[in-house]
Image 1 (cartoon, rainbow, N blue to C red):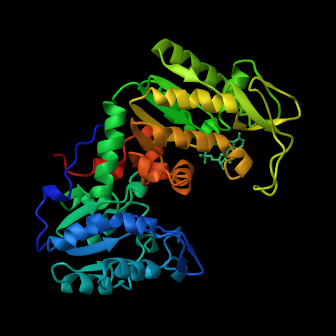
Image 2 (image 1 turned 60 degrees about the horizontal axis):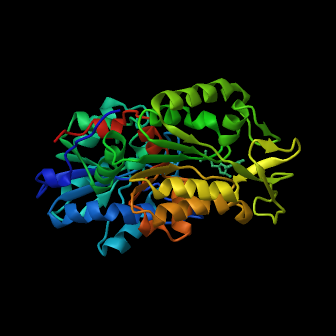
Image 3 (image 1 turned 90 degrees about the vertical axis):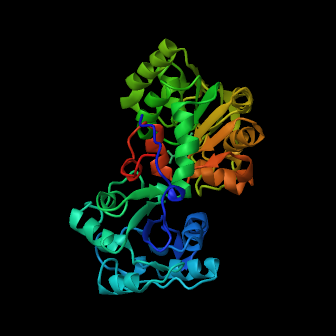
Length: 400
Ligand code: AMP
């Protein structure tokens, strides 16, 4: 597991300098309108700091998957407009990423002003981390700031390659990921409890393996728990089951025992006959022991006793990391396990960290976000962080 101690924007003199800032402005849009500006709002502290310090700010980001082709559907046009509103200052969108318009606008920037380059993925060289594209991006600036944690697990020209040509530091978002999540994984206050959920064991193999070397208690809920329960000889009915991962689950249970890690699995389960269709359909549910699920029933959430068991484990913790829902939380009847975990984290005085994606959305929708120490701004990136993998968008930055 890499321990990151990277320079940030406050460690470098930015006044009067051209600063290329990689943001994650990949916001959800419908009919050309932004449906959540959260990622733009989260990027503001770094952008404002640089503008206030008199930097000439050149912002860039990807949007969607235009596959290396210019496609107006994936333009950053709406982002530039929203950013201008939020900053109370016009942020012009360049017609290209490293073309003549971007270069002219970057050259004409005054101190304290910002421009936005067009979608970095309009250039096929971006995702190949092409050094020529990275060099062209770098040629417009004096300093590189990476603040796109959501893209930090990808080695692309604008997330990592450009750091080969410019002094590179992190913005506030990546700084917080490093200082909270990085610290929890490298030097946690104990007891350290991790809670994993979500659909499949196979998506979190390396996370489970890595965390078993770090935590005091590992809690497994969600669809992935049933393969563990089956590996212990339980009857799991028609619940999610990954036959190829049964041996892996046994291996992980043995590793937990060897490392003295308490591995908590659901003791009871919320069952139904069929998977809800539509997903939010009204349901009749019942509760059974999680190793005694009838052959024609499926487990779709943890049960009431497990909610208590998991909440109790959180209560005694000093550090808690959570990634993945405890059940099919899209259905209100099957969201109770996920809500119970979110509540337990919100009520805890421990350092609480929620990985991106569904669990982050659950905390926000339930209004618990402000009670959590840190909600990661990256789904895939936060999982790779939990796996102990090196994140190219962070390792490329200057050490303190
Ligand atoms: P992930 O993307 O791996 O975090 O998984 C999230 C998805 O897992 C959500 O869409 C949940 O509905 C689904 N999920 C959680 N628990 C179960 C379960 N017991 N059976 C089926 N799907 C589940």
